[in-house]
Amino acid sequence: MSVGGVGGASGHFRTEPTEPTFGSAAGGVFKSLLVAGASAATSGAGGIGGSIVSKLLGGGGSSSGVDGGELSQSEMLQRQEKILAESRFWQFETNVMKAKHDMNKSILQNIRA
Amino acid sequence: MAGIIEHGRDDIIWLAETGFCYLELGDATAARETFAGLVALAPDNASFQAALGESFSREGSLEEARDALKTAVKLDPGLAYARCLLGDVLARSKRKEPAVDELRKAIELDPDGPVGSTAKTILAGIEDEVYPPPPGEGVNG
Picture 1 (cartoon, rainbow over the protein chains, first blue to last red):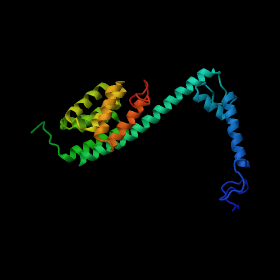
Picture 2: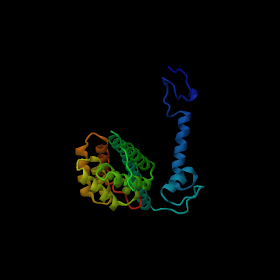
Picture 3: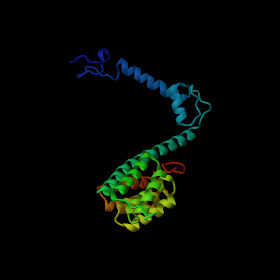
Picture 4: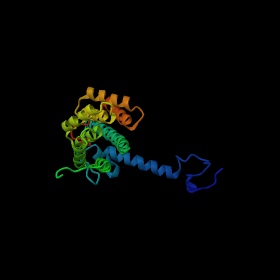
């Protein structure tokens, strides 16, 4: 049984949802935004999604989201792989710096003792 | 007597704290200068030698870092901290096998502590081929 809640008629935030929330009005809006963003990104037609993805892939997209040129699929894959490798490296480097921070603290404690 | 400055234990601890603070703040040059001073004051202290090596490493001076860390290992072969940092510098210098050896020794010496944990993190990066950093990347540039 529904007890109302913040989400009101959309069906969100109910403690006992009586209907699936994915198909609700709010869910639909988010879903359509995601779909619109993704299609803009892949078609290069513009929009925020298109601009971000284009910049990530190094396509030289302008701030308006309009791409200056097209990349072949293999070039896009290469760039995606490069981005992934760099992302993995920076994640690793962050972990090393955190570990070194703890290590230095412990060495300093030993020096003080 | 002129030219001789006596330093107490508290002064040395204060300088060491300052050096580690510089390392944390990312000022490798100031850290290197501080630890170089500490090494001059206490040349037999392996931890200060190792911290000097780490400062060189963060400045991007890998050869000087390796020399300082090797001296630290000679001074105290059981100091996991020096072996871990030497392993890190060897990995950055693309010397995979000796790097792995040093990191494994560091893990043996401090299996459950923060030094062993750092060595395990670096070792995992080498095994996953995330490490060493590509040219122009990483904290050492």
